[in-house]
Length: 106
Image 1 (cartoon, rainbow, N blue to C red):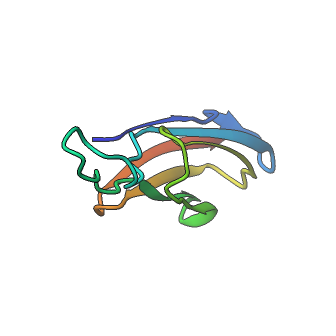
Image 2: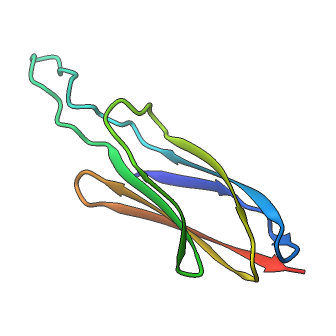
C-alpha cells in the first residue's frame, strides 16, 4: 500500500499564495524490469495525481513509467478562503490513495 505525505500550511490570509508539497511512497515498477526467472515484472505505477481545493482542481498530472520512485510534487496556489485541500494518487490497478488537509483563512 502506498503512503502519502503532504506538507500544507495550516493557515493563510485570503489571497495568499502558499507552497504545497506532496510525496507518495511507491516503488513505481515500469514494466521493463525482469524478476530472477527472467519474466517481466508487470507495470505498476502511479499514473495520475490531482489536488483540489473545495472541489476546484488546482493541480492535475498524468504520469508515465519514466517517473522516478516516490513521485514528489511541489506547487503553489492562491488560497481564496478556508477550505480542504484533497490530494489523490491513482495506481495502474485502480488503487486510489487520498490525503486531505484543511487550510484556515485568518
